[in-house]
Image (cartoon, rainbow, N blue to C red; front, side, top):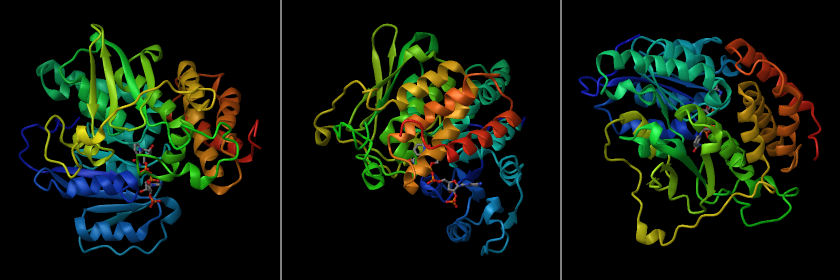
Length: 410
Ligand SMILES: NC(=O)c1ccc[n+]([C@@H]2O[C@H](COP(=O)([O-])OP(=O)(O)OC[C@H]3O[C@@H](n4cnc5c(N)ncnc54)[C@H](OP(=O)(O)O)[C@@H]3O)[C@@H](O)[C@H]2O)c1
């Protein structure tokens, strides 16, 4: 284990950004470029976008970059001094480099699962927007973060790095909000975690979601995000995945994780304590804020995100989610209660279901139907704490099923 990055920063921390060209990745770069005294980008990885990766490398001059395997032959213009690595282990290689202190995970799916496990095992700090890693493998990842924290706690019990959340830092705005609400609190005083959801574009209709179009589903009312997570927000599958993510991050039982629809997306989430007191975190819908909090924790620094104007916000509304119109929320919660085989099945099926919906080969209502069919078929039986190799094999098996399935119920 490398020694924990000190809160008394005496040199810029070395950062690897996995998925640097995506929605979160670009915003992470934006934040990192604004804090040159604290961070130095030493490694970048993306899937296919060689042009943007080359442009980022020209600006940031990292030591090394990697493109996903499918694009490994792509032409990539790099500045002098920046190397390129290829191969199926490239992300792990980047995430565990000696000059990397902190890994920002901004990829989708489980492509970064192995690299996250390796990075934590090597004593790196991981700041993750990617929820799939925790949803599929919370049982593998959280013990590593807890172990790192426990080792610090032996000598320095009050150190911020004596908490697992200092090692595995959530970027998802809801989980960042909960993290911020929990500062200075004990988990034993928590009565419930309250995840807020905008409700997506179909909150107020139509009653029948079978015929909604790709364009309608991509029109998120409050957040600007990548296509996959935008569709997940429209089905509420995203909130279901976040319930599972919260369960792992905060070690809270499912019956103490609530979801509340809050259309204005000003309250990013809240925690209710045993005395009935409720703490909430408010912010504008700008991911640069939770990204920066995860990077600079436990410090706060001025941010490029605008502050909330309560008077301009005017009113804040809340209502219960409708699990009949949005069954994906219930399906995800049920999968969480079954175990990690079921939740790994859920995310693999969801990724295929969403890409099929975007490609026009599955109706919107076919997404939850496909999730339920996949969890029933692959998720319910078997070891509910699968190892890494089993998870990767299961992911491939479920994807093949989901790609070929007519979409039960559609
Ligand atoms: N977007 C948001 O506001 C938001 C909010 C909360 C949580 N999240 C979560 O954050 C994660 C990323 O979301 P996103 O919206 O930023 O996704 P996105 O826009 O689709 O970006 C995904 C990134 O991963 C890269 N990538 C794909 N395959 C790769 C591979 N094999 N190796 C290295 N990089 C690879 C992509 O590169 P190419 O573009 O070059 O293919 C891209 O840079 C998801 O888990 C999502 O649920 C996102």
